[in-house]
Length: 219
Image (tube, rainbow, N blue to C red; front, top):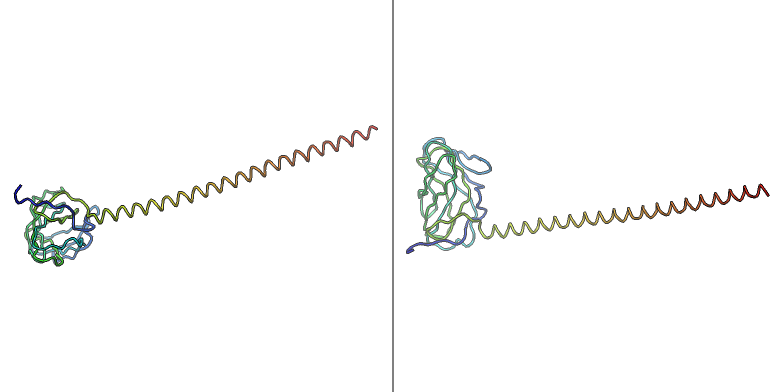
């Protein structure tokens, strides 16, 4: 399709949820089910500044980038906020919010500099509660389904491998401990058998000795 540009990878790191922000007057930061969001107490023109790390591969200005995010809305004025960057200004996110439902919204931007985006959500004309997850910034003018950045996937693989190594070391230690117990039990069994043999020998010797005494008394 002419003019269609589809990105390949997510340029936002740790993108499954927001973790940091600062809010202007009238915007109250909240958490719901582990997701960061904002309560807008009245229709106003204020904003919330976002802090999310970007991949070093975000390094090409004057090309299209598609920004998309899931928003869970609670309220009676389901208007999506705007998305701001330093060189593009505020642009309304496209998509119709629904009450108590996750909805994916997006905007296509063309930053004129590869400087830090300094992104904001702008809440002009909105009110209610907004919660965010699965941020994605990708080259192109067509947003695609959320996927984590490759760096995050690699980090998860490294973390999983580290966890598996710890688990393996613990298992080896337990097996070693079990082997030690088994050796101890074997030694106890051997001592027990030796004791039985010794007792049997002592008893047999005592019986034979007593028989000899009895036999001699009749001679």
